[in-house]
Image 1 (cartoon, rainbow, N blue to C red):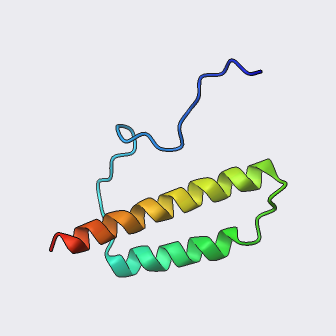
Image 2: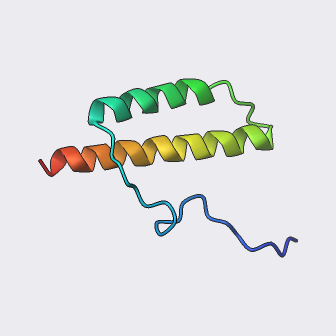
Length: 72
């Protein structure tokens, strides 16, 4: 059992967006991140943490771009 204080992957206070990419850029980035993380070894903790962080960032960018596009 660990007594470490959990550090969430995303903290809205700390990770507030200052810039939202265009939908085209966000979609291209999401596709690139999917391709980059596809060969990650599911049995390698470091690979999985890197993949989770990269995919989280790409998904949040894509959702922010979609929200911005919808508000036009």
